[in-house]
Image (cartoon, rainbow, N blue to C red; front, top):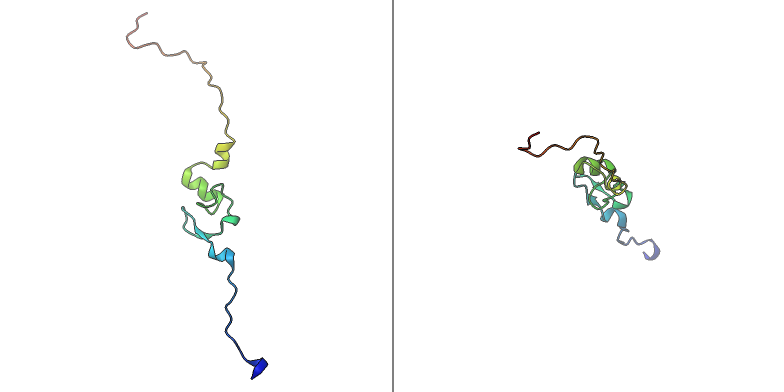
Length: 82
């Protein structure tokens, strides 16, 4: 049969499909390279990160402290008399 003989050859494996992770919040399988989350190895999307933590890591990185406004008179010590 020579040239027309069929041989079993291994199928190529898509490497991206073999490295899927499970989202910590929703449990779906996802590729970390496609994740919109800052924590790519934990969450599948920005929304799962925000929903699970209550804040996003990118928002935390860009957060700035505002100086405290002491416009209110400080409370007087307990037991102090006028």
